[in-house]
Length: 242
Image (tube, rainbow, N blue to C red; front, side):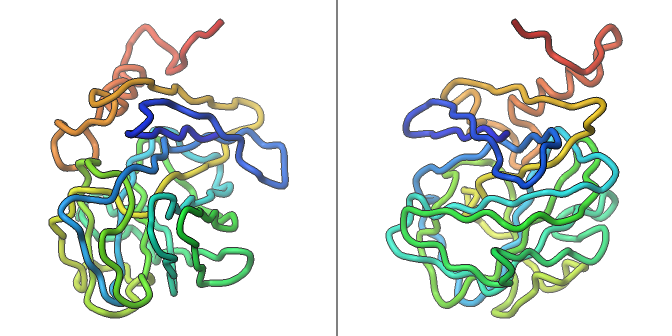
């Protein structure tokens, strides 16, 4: 399941991931908001986008990456894409290990029409609880005003004009001045069948959006709530419902 949050609508929608098995799964809150401001332009460059997830996978089971061009005015093509865990020591655009190539219906490239979205094929990736995942996308040609979360308060790194999706090191990446979170709209992970993990969905406006959070991508309201649940000495890291 993934939560889709819209800044324009200020509402939450729940989507069941369309997977081929019945293992429990949960996801990163996703969003399709207006383009970043000011408009950001890339030209055959690779974006490396971090996403801080609260829930991890079980024993290396799969993850799906969701990309969105829902607010885009023209189609966008990604010549290559990958996913990796962020190096917990170096941080930034440095991956902990060689990134895993993403495919879309078996292809390493994907074109998303204006108003559309795409979901990667599942990849085998062990994602710890509260990890930061790096999603790398090589954008084909010149693209400006990239659609995405307009005030994600998350750093985004940009490479030289080349396919750097397989790079582990951050040598070819520079932190951009983008204020938004382009194209990445969600991450689904599987959880244990014997001890499934659910999602806590936040409903709200700027407070949930985190547009006043620090710019490291790890201090949104959702992160604070997750930390409180995990660190509660009297809790079991779960939320009662009914």
